[in-house]
Image 1 (cartoon, rainbow, N blue to C red):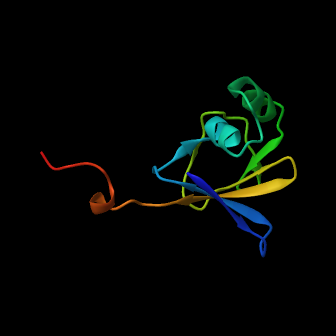
Image 2: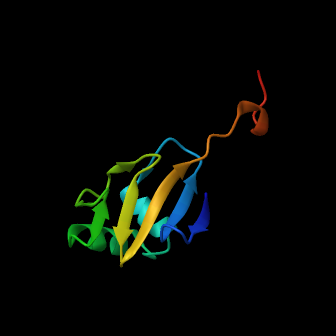
Length: 92
């Protein structure tokens, strides 16, 4: 995962290499929370929006193109699909 700043749209793109990421993990990855308990508190207090709607589900799955707003910052989930050739896996 990596962070890419996108100054035009005032969104920060967060690149993930999996099909989804759970909201609480995403908040920690963005460095908006240090611990899972802190991420949970943000979510349960209604301080997090997913795709412009308040979300209180800490296990909500975020997919490519979803946006998360927290602490007056907007993050966009970008899925980077690694090709099989690029991975370290070897065929059996």
